[in-house]
Length: 216
Image 1 (cartoon, rainbow, N blue to C red):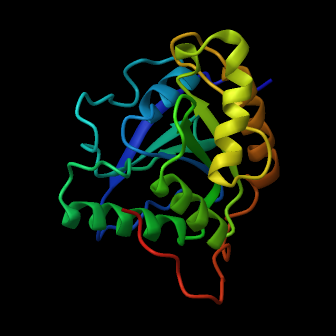
Image 2 (tube, rainbow, N blue to C red; image 1 turned 90 degrees about the vertical axis):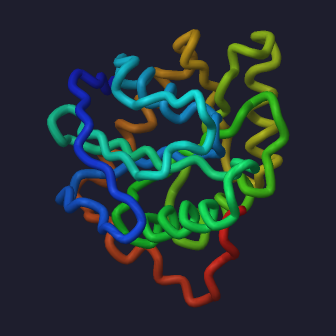
């Protein structure tokens, strides 16, 4: 099974700056609403609590952050959180534009869509899935904060949020606190890297229809 032995922050990019050129190594992105646990997810996978900064203020992250894994064998990419109601509409639009630019770049090998296992998916969660499908990006649903639920309810809750958001396939129950689901995610990443590392993922967009509406 894949083991992450080295993880390093590479760079960030914001609106108006192009994503870095990372060659043909697979880029696996994490996306989800603000405060769903993306930074904790990355840190748990990499066994490094300080790798991805965890903000106490939801909606604060406004950059796309790139992390090199195992010496550039592949990259984890932390996308800004969406759906933070207190953020000004203009800021929400900038975040949406930034994320859409990356999704249509042709560089994304796979997306992990993080959903809180305790709650019904939001309209923004469903819209994110529409974007992923529009740009033809493979994805996996991660049901976070499973430790907040009784053990017998974790798998049913993960299945429920995956179905509710309109996803195909099962979700992976995950808890950074209990290290739950880490092996399952690493196995999934290993499969992704095996399938995608030799391909730059160009031309994944290519849809003929009008783009979906922006995230709120």
